[in-house]
Length: 82
Image 1 (cartoon, rainbow, N blue to C red):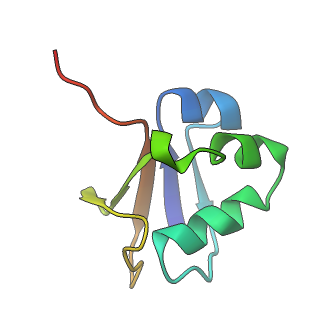
Image 2 (cartoon, rainbow, N blue to C red):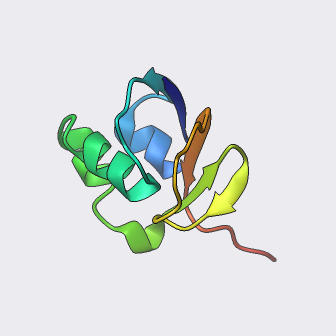
């Protein structure tokens, strides 16, 4: 089981802030593929990966990062400073 957190416009598009799923994903990219297949809301939210960032157990990672024993994955838009 892994907890998935959605922030900003991802939360709006998917309609929930978090969920716990049973995943067979080996990497963040594999997890995204599983999520896209859930329904159209997910497919739309994950349609442009250049507009997304991910964190595994609160550490910023690339999409090819392994999920070995991860408890939490968060998805959010790129952060900007100002």
